[in-house]
Image (cartoon, rainbow, N blue to C red; front, side, top):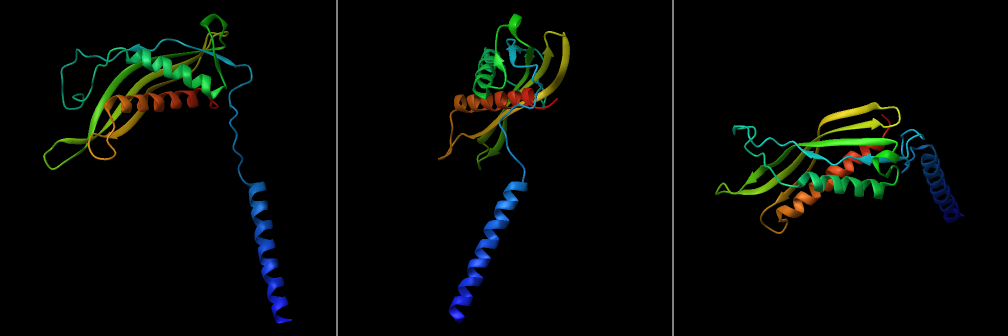
Length: 189
């Protein structure tokens, strides 16, 4: 009899926990992959990014890690278009057919040292891609939003088991920038 009573208590406890868990799930926050933008917008044109990195400035302590990388603006444009295609909320089209126009310019490409070894050799860098972006409603010729200093980045090691070639790090920074741009474009403004 005592054994049966213990089983009933265990069964009641398990049943209570399961019921509480299902109520918690039902009342919790939901996650959706749908866009928060207005239904009137379904297409976007991405203008080719412009490289505005100024290499004529005199070097000083805050800009000594700036780098001019030829054709990186083309890489940014390509990964942003690809990211919109993967995301699916806004379909990239030609300018004359699109609801929205995304404009962007690269203002800074930096490779900042983060860690040094005992001999003052850099062992970790962070690649920063800084852009100014703006989104326009093409049909109403209206600026919806603009954001300056928008950044994508990636940190990487130069030595050891976690070492990554700089080209891989640049591609990862490009992917991070594209992901952030698309998220910004499809979120509620």
